[in-house]
Length: 404
Image (tube, rainbow, N blue to C red):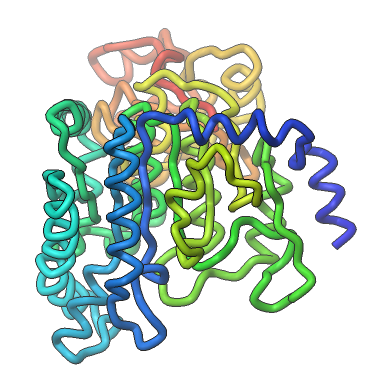
């Protein structure tokens, strides 16, 4: 416990000006809500209609108040599994079948609920490919903005029926942009320049220990910055939330995406009565959830490079190259690369790691991986001789590098 409080001291988690921090929530206009599996189900693993209709009622209230809510929802796989009388964890194909059955049932609940308040909903099913390809990413941005401007509430879910998250075995260097709705909600918030992301689960917020194991665990009201030490602690001390696909680790990853994109984020307990309305009530006296404050505002393209794309390969660089990238903000030259894993094409996003294997940046490559392997460790002047052509002096130019 003492170690954790040292972390709190380092990152200045708890702030005195709480009311000022709260205004980032109450004043937020564009808000992404993520409703987790555990808050949409009751103790019998069935859909909790009373709770979901309360979410709908409170979200409709915010809409009438001039807010722009967007919903990222879980629950399709669970609904389908209940309807089919099967266990969705048996295999990937069974899970996808459950999603196909459950998705229409889940959407009908949202559509019927919001219709009673005269609000039109729009169903959006997304996979990793919708973020990885830049054109699709920009098209999605335009579509969502158009739907919001037309007065609808987009209801978004991962398209589990065709999702390729199982490709994590494809190769060691391959990494999907998201495999759970925590990260998906953060990517949506980042893409839409949302003021706020609200992640509702069955926990009251971020604690200094696992509250389901330690009854004396204390909630943290405000997190000013998520440091590496803080992340390492939470990964080891706080176990995943049962029933959902993610846990505190995926939620912290989501918080990082949003706060580095200039937004504020909240983790709160979706089982707290009228939690949605209470979060935005200026007269609320209870410190609900944990608030994560914005730390920077990455340019849109760098957000996409850092978080929204599948990673096709891993480039290991020497200490000199790491210093040039992180301290001098230079391009990555072939002479600084010492190893390449995976397979990539020109324009793909790759992970950049140091000699200890720690990822510190991502970038868009100017050459395919086979050509990169031929020129790595060589001077840029040798590229034309080795390859027979030369597009750039750098393997990755500095404008296409996002530091993590």
